[in-house]
Image 1 (cartoon, rainbow, N blue to C red):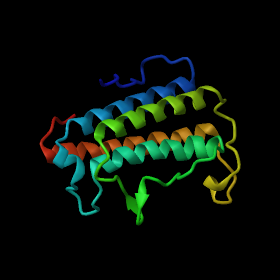
Image 2 (image 1 turned 120 degrees about the vertical axis):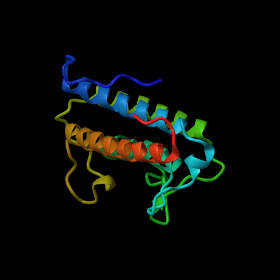
Image 3 (image 1 turned 90 degrees about the vertical axis):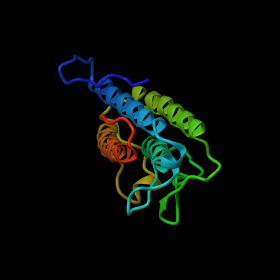
Image 4 (image 1 turned 45 degrees about the vertical axis):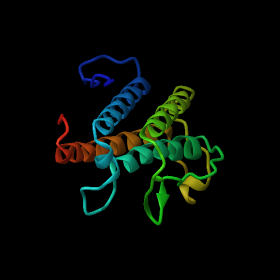
Length: 168
């Protein structure tokens, strides 16, 4: 079910609420678009780069995991790059769409809990995510994640159109 677009004219109580509203919207749209595709369109690329929509869905889950749990909170994550193999996105053939959608929704709940538990000006924990650089603030991480979601949702718009599914 698609969440309505967080129109700029709608009041919000805080910047945290603003970020979370956009995340909820972008996740919802990505799931809707991916679920509208046939099994063939989910697992086969229409692009020279070779990525597939089901790989993108898996990537979105790992993006949140890497930036918020592994990066910002400094949590131990067994395989933060588990969405990649041989320097490209990867999903095992036996992985189901339902499982990947459920994984993104579960990650969304963990991400929301992290964001709600911290001030936007708080710095992330030092750790391997930052590759020796100082950790950014939560607000900077969220801004990065919002632009990444928006970019990937645009990618999905093109794939859906090429597949002949509903555009918009």
